[in-house]
Length: 76
Image (cartoon, rainbow, N blue to C red; front, top):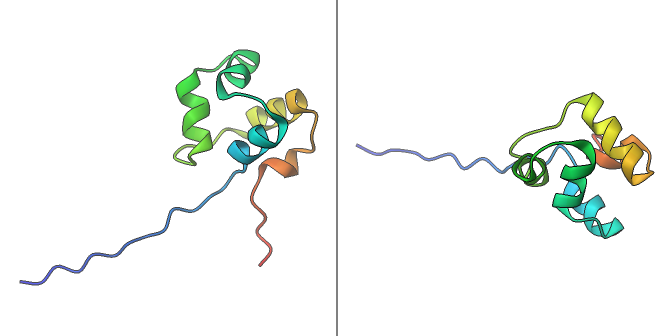
């Protein structure tokens, strides 16, 4: 019996990892500032979990950027 395997590419929904790198901010620094665990920020950076809109707002305020910079554009 043949088993077909479908490989799904991981979809990136946020740019948190890129923005943190651009700003020179460490994951643990962001975690402390918005009162979440380092593991939570890590999960956002790998796009395995997504922050709430409220949390995205908090991140944007801390980084002094427009919230839209944290999201991957849906424009083709």
